[in-house]
Length: 239
Image 1 (tube, rainbow, N blue to C red):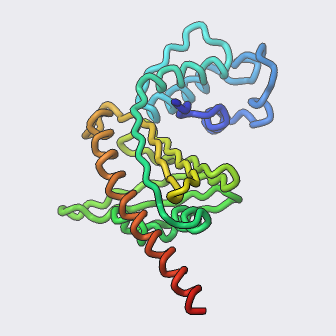
Image 2: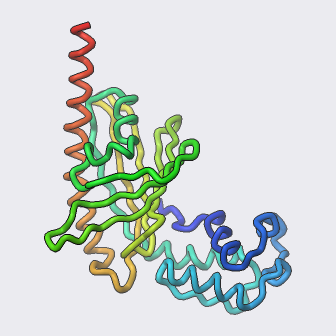
Image 3: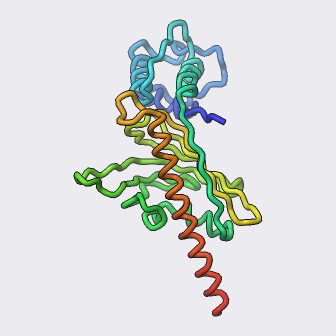
């Protein structure tokens, strides 16, 4: 299943920032309200289109389009066919609560993943966390980092995440699914993305890299969470 890379709420945030039109005006349920009715002139619309095109590395033909929902549809119609997708999973022999808590403790990710040098929490609001990740320095000293946002739904055993700073990606959406089985907790990662035209790798090349790295990281996470589960079980016996 392909998830639209830009939600309507995210799109309206861009419109509000580029035009100055209040949010309550933009969030109308009346489909007959046009862009002009909302007080957005041609320059404001150009600002919106330019930001979206630059952000997602696409070109929009809006001739004849009269309302923002139609523009939103045009954006996602372009992004969906271009989206690459990877899916990887692992079964962790540990209680669900421990798997959930350890894999969603973003601040501790450098101790859970081998690829991250640091994880800085920028903002928490309910079940949503925004954070900056940094990889270990490359041989030439360059450090890759980016900001992501993560929304956790423990009741439904699901997490949605996306890169706020996409870097070489036109967009990157990540879904974590958890499922309890007789052998443990299955954790499945689904990543949907599209690379920018000037990125060092195309969609196919990045998909291969993500697949390889995901298998490495999932195996490491399994090892570390299962070790924590055994340690807890041993401590409980001693008590």
